[in-house]
Amino acid sequence: MEPKIIRNKHEMRNWSRSMRSQGKTIGLVPTMGYLHQGHLSLITEAKKHTQLIVVSIYVNPGQFAINEDLSTYPSDFNGDIQKLKSIPNGVDVVFNPKNLYDYGVEREEKQPGVRKMGEIVSCLEDEGGHETWIRVEGLEKGMCGKSRPVFFRGVATVVAKLFNVIEPDVAVFGKKDYQQWRIIQRMVRDLDFAVKVIGSELVREEDGLAMSSRNVHLSPQEREQALSISRSLFEAKSAAKKGKNICSELRQSVIESIEAAGGKIDYVEIVDQESLETVFELKNGVVVCVAAWFGKVRLIDNMEIS
Amino acid sequence: MEPKIIRNKHEMRNWSRSMRSQGKTIGLVPTMGYLHQGHLSLITEAKKHTQLIVVSIYVNPGQFAINEDLSTYPSDFNGDIQKLKSIPNGVDVVFNPKNLYDYGVEREEKQPGVRKMGEIVSCLEDEGGHETWIRVEGLEKGMCGKSRPVFFRGVATVVAKLFNVIEPDVAVFGKKDYQQWRIIQRMVRDLDFAVKVIGSELVREEDGLAMSSRNVHLSPQEREQALSISRSLFEAKSAAKKGKNICSELRQSVIESIEAAGGKIDYVEIVDQESLETVFELKNGVVVCVAAWFGKVRLIDNMEIS
Image 1: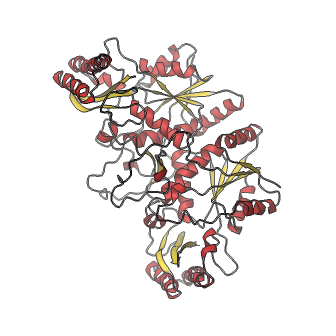
Image 2 (image 1 turned 90 degrees about the vertical axis):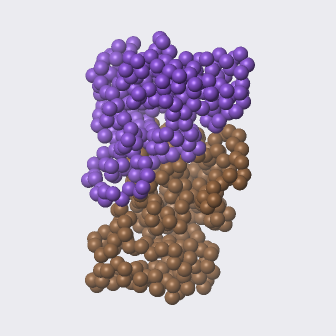
Image 3 (image 1 turned 135 degrees about the vertical axis):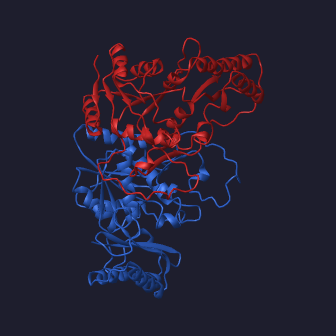
């Protein structure tokens, strides 16, 4: 099925409202494009919950810091559409706005050079104008929030915008981005969005590598080395099953395996699945979260241990 | 007309959706209760725009710092309902939730005493749980944002919650809370809320005092002294009309009049009506904003000069 491509916010909302007035339910799968099997699994999950599916494709400048990889983030819109057409019954709408932060006003002039020393800003802020940000102040603090200080602020904000434009009944997020998923869940609860948030399981390549749009940037050698992440996570899970329950030891094994393979650790954390607070002795409902660099590519992965 | 009183979020949203499915439009007037003529004028304004009117009455703990006047904020629910019944054709719903931050989960245990030195928190934070906050980072910085550091964060957040629960087409805010009104406008634009925000003119007592629920706490003497605020604002406007255009001089006159009457200045600022940035030489579209203490009561007022 050929999806309808909508690029304008108002047209998007009008479509949603017209469908809702016909009693239809709408599922949203937010993506930054360059779709892979992981994204397609989110769509399959969404189809279990609603009659209509909107996939948004938008690389959000608000969640990248100016030293991050916004400019090299991969994209292939036509390829994405082909992939979406291959899904049984397809998807109904691809929402592909040019700029979600263009409010049709002249850009405010900002004085250059007034940025505070050491202040970290997103790629958006140099454009001026937008100034409203949502922070999930507890859950955003650790893990990816430490090394990417504007990331979750940007994610929460753009997701709120997408919710307000698309007005979905259900939204599906991948549990690969575990912290992001929990943050969106918490935001929806705390701000009373009328959206049900579903977490969908992480999808791996056959050799275990967690699927990611960024994998395309790995050299063949780096890709081979990066398998150490999933391998060490499976080993941790298996060690836990055998009774190893001191988190510092499990964590140290993961770190050593990844470093031995040539990866540079950003973090390895064993945390409670709900609160994302560090767990010291293994208990029910933890998740081991990893971020590590292989060359210029930062990969994340995680493993729930229940 | 007797308004329907709804205390539950889900019932509230169901009512709105049922009305919308019948093609009705909904206007929201958010209040903290203890209604006066100023509030009633907001309702009159809202009635110009939509067929149905929801008035929310909720004293939001999220916008009070722990040293502020949450505990003494006046309330008179039955009196409010009587006033609403006196409006021609009345209002349709009074949304009066007990606790908008109760998510039906056990409260998270917070360790007491881990608060950072000098950290200012809202009355909500001692209850735990809620952790998602919206900040309009530019507009919230000056004026009331300086002396009430969690105020606008709390206002923006609770308004977003009310929008998500009530799903109004239009929301009316008083221009008495000028900075608040601009912040809500900006939030709606930046987060793409499908709500039209209307600013409604400030309403004064016959003697000029801006109407406020807090006026009830003024002693007769303080109330008399407090007239210096509106008097000095009218004088500034009249001086401006006569060609006085140096803002520092206009500002100084306002400060001196209020201090001479026994008030304690929190701030007097002459700012651009849109950006709320300080203006040095009078131009079109400025607003003089005042906050001052009389006894234990902090009053605000403002005067547009166009």
